[in-house]
Image 1 (cartoon, helix red, strand yellow):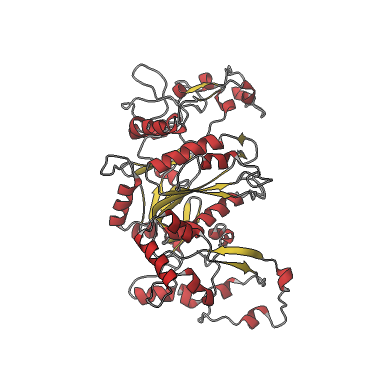
Image 2 (cartoon, rainbow, N blue to C red):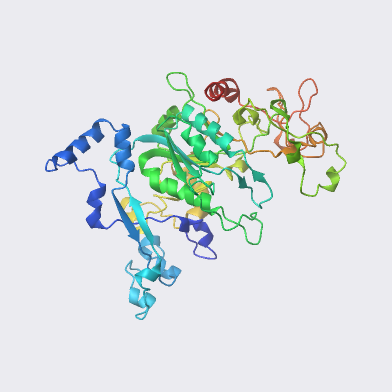
Length: 505
């Protein structure tokens, strides 16, 4: 993760939001299942129950209840320099010291005063849970949401979270995700007994496959990436770290996605249902640890929208571009009330296979046993990356150790167990909301030969040839001459959407 020249801190990508707390050795036995013959009768009974019925509700509750609580007291020290952090045994580079042992007196001096415990700051009553001898799940998904939130720059407020969450939960339960963890960022989630609508949605499902977390912490700022002080959605990133740290041990595969993103399996199980298990079986047979999905935003299909009753939300508070000022406006539209977001946005402006430029905004399903740190789109630390030079050479004495993974990225991907999914395995559908005010000039923007970008979706027939270099020029049209700009997924349209509607409506 480091670079021998120039800046390298950026490569750690918010790793400060995740930490692991080693449990003192005298307490570790409390976190393990006891299976020896010398155990007490009650302990033996509990162990037998867990082994015989690993999916039983009571046993899950036993696992999820903390075994003990600890206080974490930080000891603050001056920042360490790179030459002290890295050694020859770790890197294989002679520029670093040849011993992994660090003289703390030499590093920090003999007069450094550790602050009193009461002044050091602490986290109290951190729950420490039992370790699992078996993984009860094959695939889990986590998401961060809120009753309302602002997009980057705080210019646009989105308030359809509860409706989206209900559909997101139902869809992923339908396609074989074993458990869903919901992190609720609504600031009223735990205030004075007030329940957020996100909480109400979660509790409306009569299933033990959902876990709800009140997660009210807020971001420091929410500026756009190009801003001189770009904000970090720290609450969301911390939720992702929490999900992987807390629940990664329970599952073979894990993903963290937004409620406007759908992980769609494209393989059928033995009952003919589209389900993630056949895909996971294939990944097991190929020894794949990370499934990667190219991402692009779907467009809302014009035929599945309707005029909004409240047209006050269509007023654009921002100054309209001069070149658009003369385009005739019309009532704004939104998704039809009896249609799913999945169907409305099943309209990709680039048909499969997606070009490599869509790798940048990928999302992943990964094995938490392999991925030690994950950040939004990327697996930032894996067990392979974490392997030191000396450890690597013990196992592979004749192979070259790649000291800087990022400089060997193409070579790394070819030799390691991760791959991009194709459309026969699984797809990511991104249904990011188009704001009502963005639909008021659709007739002028969405036509053959228009010089403006069209935010709405007009379906192309299957025989319309796609040319990537021309897709922004508004030249595509159907056989009857009608304008079109997107293609839909037939499995989603003809099978998954009807099944989802049957569960929702």
